[in-house]
Image 1: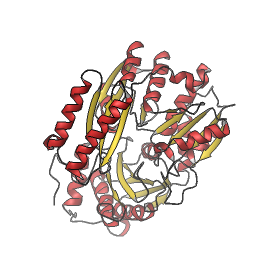
Image 2 (image 1 turned 90 degrees about the horizontal axis):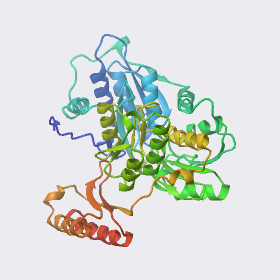
Image 3 (image 1 turned 45 degrees about the vertical axis):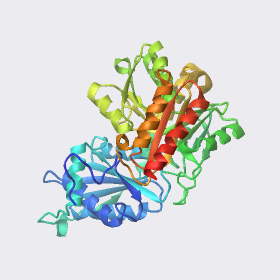
Image 4 (image 1 turned 180 degrees about the vertical axis):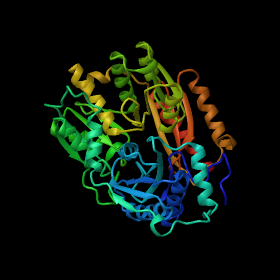
Length: 455
């Protein structure tokens, strides 16, 4: 089956994902993807190089070996960096002037899942047309007439200092005249890719670090820890008396915070705090923040008061980055905790995000709880429904009926939308309104309708 132009068959919203050792997340497909990425980026008569990194999943060993074999089989060298946050792999790719980067990670998903995503030599996610070219190569079983032989076969190298390189890179996003002396920071690394680098960055800048989720065993990544379970780091904050807590996800590209009182703060609070700080320092380009449709309406109101415009995009950090690149903005993010600071990096980076929050705390000399007071949110309910198939929502009679009923009751006092997850078999319901009990009941109605149609 060949991928049709305009309709991607293999790639989702963030690379290729699935249960490890079941198609498409098999060694066989990983090898083909390795060959495809090498083929697509091998444009000139010179030695080409592709960076390969991963998180801490058990299946990473299998997929790493397969994709590197595919890359080398096309006469391209593979640079292996081992476990490193996704933004770290993007940085190494750009820093080493490699032709592309490969990340083996399923982000916040459980350990039995895995994923393969790619970066360009600039450290940006691939354009749709390049992903289509890769799909055509893989799904069409294309095989170039000439395979490299003898000395033309690619070599594999280990980049031994990758962690150190990334630690220095992340620290450089924090002002050199400031330190974290006197601050106690709890950080939950989700037993994932940031388990070494995140504590090192904060420690080297002077903080006392309370590390959590830093003992990966291949099976405990995201297991009751990290950004999806911020209660974990909240407990660490309360027990240790920390000034702040950070929870990263498995690949280290998103961040959720906990203030000194134990209050959990999502990406909307991060965006509000950082956008206001950047505007104060005259560093927010075009006085504009890019956010997705998931962000709370309170964010728009807080930014409007400060004279900051909020541009909304579809869900996904990729959509945020595209909007930023298109219009020359330098800061955007998602409620889920993906933040992109173009002045420092090219993709979502949980560690760099944490450093921007810490910079603001240190410069203003106030605790996180006070900074968070800049945002007042409306009650919002997020509910996931596991589905066995993904059909066009507009064609599901029960869902359409329930949605119209909810919209009628909300009127102009809230908003509601349903979408499918791009990485998991889930339908996601988001409702915002004046009363939490009311919107909870509405979410249950919509969930029941979805179950009847899709489960």
